[in-house]
Length: 240
Image (cartoon, rainbow, N blue to C red; front, top):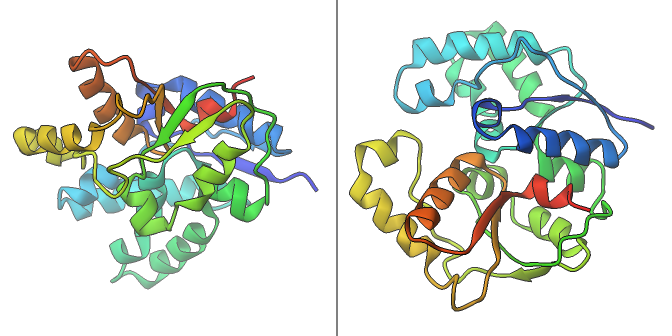
């Protein structure tokens, strides 16, 4: 049976990497889904929430709930944005009605790789990508959503792809939203540690399920003059 899926594109995909949203749609359609997009969508409220501006975050979150609560399933190419939606119950802890609506929404909001593997039971998508690829395990995805096996299962099914495990697999990339702005020296030291070993392991492409982490990683790789590319995992899964 065809699943109808509402795409939450995320701010970064909308403003900086529309190719990630396009790839996500292509992958979902290849997996047999019908994808819808509501142009009324905005932000998930994570920037305001993480900065302590909870009243403003609630207003953004209410708009998100109103926009998506009629959908059968919501899929985002972002572990951090998905994790934020799962935190709406915390955000509305003192508002029972909104807390209940938030809980119902969180139950059907999924990160892309989790939706493919856990919900659709799909790993083979007919992708071909003959390169050595390493996965960055984004903090929100791994620690809040339990993502680890899902991205790897999908990548192992890609024709020609050789999966390389990072030596710094448990390390944060140092982005953390406003953390990278408030503590640039520490953020840079963290990302340099994260990227150590890529050349020795002959990695061609570094991938992740979060555009925010990839923005941090891509920027530092370019600043260092590295030949290593960064691609969102959806872009690899959409490759032919």
